[in-house]
Length: 212
Image 1 (spheres, rainbow, N blue to C red):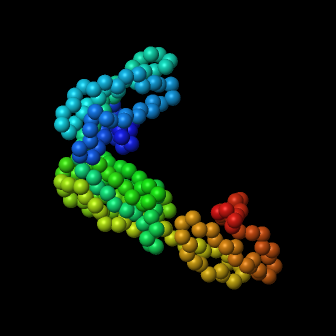
Image 2: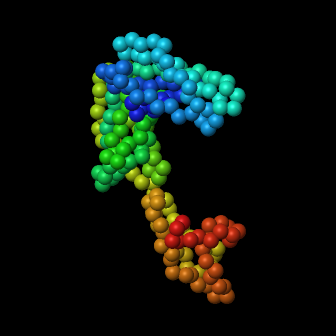
């Protein structure tokens, strides 16, 4: 369920969405995508006040015609926003920003926008596969909050070669996440033939330097 593009947080049959202060509840865009075999058959307003709207969503099984009811609670609150970049100040898209039960992802410009309720506190966490996790402490939010730029660094990994006790040891080195490694010169050892590099000690899966 999304409301004005904001993804709802689902807990059982309860769905919660927080939108910016001043949102006009008469102009909400609600999109519901049911699981395969189910259809959203009705959305009705149960309650609406100045800063809260409660709606009832009915989902019907296409096989049995049985129904389930979900309660969507829409609140308004404040915006926690900011920008995520790499070490070269290049914006990073697809970073997940989480503060308590609120979560969003950065766009192509590296920007994120979290709509949170009044007095929200906690740890703002930034995660993306291949990057180190960064956290920031957020004190009570009583107004729109712009967070200083967040910098994520790519994870680095150590590359080493197990020579099985033969030939001259190849020096280890580090690479960044997603970076391919270059095949070293083939080692040699008296009385042995080099048969390639493998991922496992049982020599079943070869290492393909062009893709691994």
